[in-house]
Image (cartoon, rainbow, N blue to C red; front, side, top):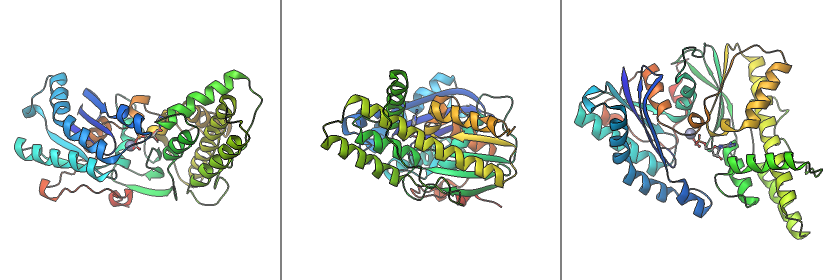
Length: 346
Ligand code: KG4
Ligand code: ZN
């Protein structure tokens, strides 16, 4: 089965054509990142206007790259939420028009569920159920149990800022630019290679509490306080910025790893899946692997290739293949606050 997926929930305009949920026939991600770098973050109207300009050309280019024509497609899939409403509307309304014009079934996809399907791409050894999924992106930090494709249960998530959002906001405070995750990761590596002895302690919010929830806004405030202190003392320099970047990355990844291990101890788990933009963070991958080894947890860990951690339409089309539930196009609506609970079936 060949599915064309469309993803426009944030600042990317992404289109993919995927066969049987795993084989990538064509995959294009057009990003308006350069525009957002200038403003230090995403301006929703700017993102939506770019998507309006790019989506049809990107769909044409993806079809051309795959060598397929619309008649060769079995279905279309589109992210219907959560995300930025203007951006979602561009993808959803375009997908509806094409489904009608081409006479194809259309499957609406929850972006959070979709992210996990990056782990089904280009592999002959897919994850086994029950699955524990950690989705960490710019908008979300969620722990999810999947007993099967349709059987999803949300275990916990962030009560305020998402992990990626925390990376982005802290990078802004450190004047490291946008997007913050890769910028902090780079500065943290530089701190390690510099052999600096400076250490600026930061809190690990909610790391020892009983729930599987997260909170990152306090960490951001702690960074703000440190930055203000350094500026006052005229010590807001390269070395201290790198030391803070290192500690921010350690604090966020410590919490993510600890809560994931807690979730494993409380649930029957056959595979651990990481997904979302923050999963591209090398330190998170390294610490997660080390923690599983240290605790002698022999559950296979799935981490998508970095380009499939961040937003793309390959996971949208893959998710649609494994959760093939077309809706009449007239009923599909963009929903900026769509919850993962809305796909729960147990
Ligand atoms: O999944 P994604 O592309 O979009 C959302 O659904 O939000 O995630 C984007 C987030 C941004 O906050 C970005 O800073 C973060 O992922 N990110 C990273 C890294 N690469 C991207 N965070 C930490 N380390 C990275 N290497
Ligand atoms: Zn995402």
